[in-house]
Image (tube, rainbow, N blue to C red; front, side):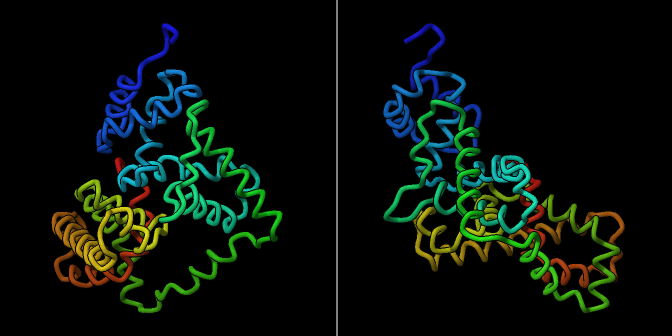
Length: 270
């Protein structure tokens, strides 16, 4: 062991300091690090990367949400010119979620192959580019086709709702951000994984170690808590007239799924 290298125990402490919201067992991490001793070589620069990777392999929801929040938004940067195809970016992101980070009940996530030789971001960049090239070879895609089709289906035909959307867009956005930040880290992780990253309730149930029915109830309860938080934030927000409040609340409920994906991406420590 060189003078610059550190033991696995110290690497664990660095990881905990870097990601305090992620509760990872010391023994589990030590085992993970020791299995990569020959490639990691005690490099302190890889300590936090190993901690996050190990926590994701253990399917800790907050860790997976943190991983996707940190690296998921960088996929277009990794893909370069390929990122002009919005459908390709979306498909690569879904592969990242399902195959690389979460895996299947009978198959571990590809993240288990991370050896800590290089940075976690470097491993991810190589994986993202490889998957994108494979998709491109399989078929051509029309840029923005899916996104445009989805946007065309958003039912903003009601004139009152449309008007309120224009007038109160900023207060509602602020209220969503405030309400999201007020949720527990694990609840934010649950919402982000489902609404932003598209993880199914079946996979989430496995990840959280509960039945699918219980998971669905928890998801519904968290949504309701978020709506209550938005309502409370709007009551103290400037610029929302009393007579418009109930209409604004209907707007919030009608577009909660749409706003969640945008707002959760901007909330720190998701």
